[in-house]
Image (cartoon, rainbow over all chains, first blue to last red; front, side, top):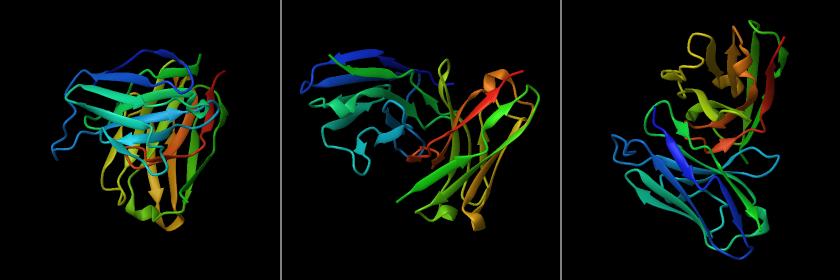
Length: 112
Length: 115
């Protein structure tokens, strides 16, 4: 199975400051159709996960533009340009290229 | 608005069975692959199974293969997960999600397997 490794696992951030989460895969994530199926999810306290980013860098509908995704090969990054209070929660990366699809361990973002 | 509402969770003894349901609305259900994902504090998130729109392709995680069966009824806009031979390690919140890459999620239903 493809192992997804996130860092850091805990991320204290001051309001208004940027934040960055890294996700590394144990194998390349380019699918046979040429796309890279790397997604990012946000799970706020007490809520279901919500997809933020699909195929590395595409924001889902309704996702603020302070969230951005980048990367290629086996290294991917989720960036928040200016953290707001509503961004508190756990962030997960997930690869949807090789079955079984697998998730990272999660990064807990909190406000300092 | 896409809505996914799971039901059928509960407490069951090891070796028992449960059937989860997911009622979908707000989109053309018959056009989309659907998935079941579970979440535990210890193992995190696991995509358990997905089923293509026409039920032509089905995938299972190794951890549930042979014990769980995913199905759908496009006429009823519903997704199902039949869970047999349940084990303590199947205890989790189970989510229904649209697409294999999980564009939308339901609120989840808790399954507890314990004697």
